[in-house]
Image (cartoon, rainbow, N blue to C red; front, top):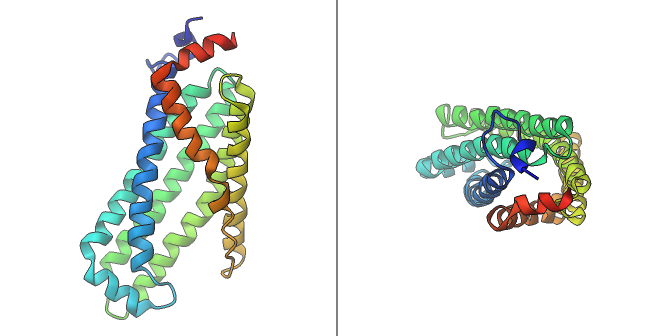
Length: 230
């Protein structure tokens, strides 16, 4: 079986290459996102104390700017990964793979819009932090809502993986479970400001395993796995 025939002609890449691109993109995202959000944003921003938040940011302007840049890079990587996964899943169902890709691209667009609020927050920052806090809250709220859309992306992705015949069914199941965390947490945060379950911290395993599976099959012979499906 010539696997290149299953790939849309405009891409000019093999499924194996798409797997590597998606795997590397996801791996880079898992490195950059925690650095930007967990190590920097969450350490500087205290949503219950505007003045302290302003002081933290003013004392770490460079770190906050780096945070914005890294989050923007993560959003761009989301678009690259969406394209690579589309190529990877076209042999299973072209329409659903396109849906999964567009859900992730739209999510990335909303995420970029949310990140722009951080840039504005930096431009209007004052010692009391009042005005800045409104933009920081907007960033968090918009991103939380966007993650619901990302959850539906994982739902479609998990279904495609399960039905593909060349991706392990257990990985598809874990991706669907991951989607539940994003959707439940996203709606929970949008409905109640006191929501604190954070189900996503227990359901993300499928996303991590997907990275390693993509890299393993990409470098070791994804095309061969697809030939076995024939």
